[in-house]
Each structure stands twice: as C-alpha cells, then as structure tokens.
Image 1 (cartoon, one colour):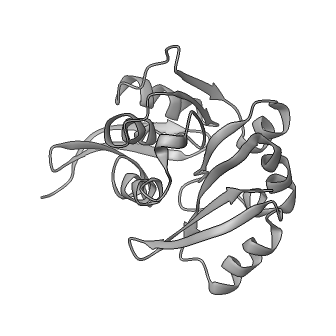
Image 2: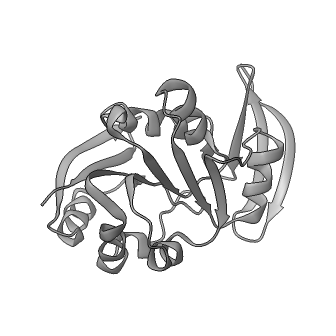
Length: 207
C-alpha cells in the first residue's frame, strides 16, 4: 500500500518531519527514516520482549520521539508504572500530543531536554532506561561516550536494565568500541540485530 502524506512539520532540530498513513496507521518520519510508530516501534518491542517487565516499576525514555514506546509499554507489555520521557525537539513533543494522543498524567511526564543533560542533572533511579536518541538517522557521538554512560550508570537501579537502540548499520568495530566504554557494573547481556540494520544492546546493572 502506498504511503499517504497527511501533514508536514518544520523543526530546527530534525529539519523535516512528516505524518504519513501506512496500512491504516499513522507514522512519524524524518526525511530519511521512520521516527515513531513504524519500524522503530518494532525495534524497541523486540528489545522489550527480552526484559522481565514484571520486575520493572519505573521507566526513563531518552529520546521519546512521537511516544510509540509509551504505547508499546502500556498496551503490549502491560506496564502501567511511571514513565518519564525526555525529548529535545519541542516540535516532536507537540506532535506526540496532537497527532498520537500522548498525554501527561500522574504516570507519564514529558520533559524537553537533551538526554545527556538530563542524565547529568537528575537524582532519580529507574528500573529500565531506554536510550533511543537519534537526529534523523544518526545517534549523536556523545551517546557513545564513556562520559554519558558513567553519568547514566548511577541512574539505573540495582539489577535494573538498559535498552540501547545503538544505531543503523554499525560496524563490528563500532559495536566492540561501545562495549569497551560501558561501566563494569553493567553485564552486557544481548546484542540484537533487528530488521537487518538496527543494533540493540540490552544491559543489566549488577554488583
């Protein structure tokens, strides 16, 4: 079925954004890739299916996008605890609310901030942190840095998990380099190749 373009948006951060309809479902795309509710949602759900969600009571989403992971957590994984979503682009936050019905309530909080800055400032701990930070098709280099992961580590509760959507078409060297920078309190559990080109890492914090 052909994609039907419903609306376009201009963003200083992501430049071009569009809402399309595909197979009777609305998706959010950038110029070059799906941003929410399409293949990206499938990638995150593959990762979430390998995490014991019955043990999770708090979730932080770094790079909330259009909010498809909120929908997945609520409807597919029956998670009804607290979710904090961090999203840098205010246009994307408005899209999540106006186009996809992601509303804030006592259990969903949306914060406009840079993922790296929020991690450095917050004192909260989370049972699960989802790292899904993209600008178009690229993960910012700072997200691969030891500084980012050393700041993130104290924010993960004991025995908590991190799901990292690490990028598209990563080389084996890039994957090995990432494993080298994560703190040794994390056990590298799984590396998934999802929908051919996405690499997803699942980590657990142990002592």
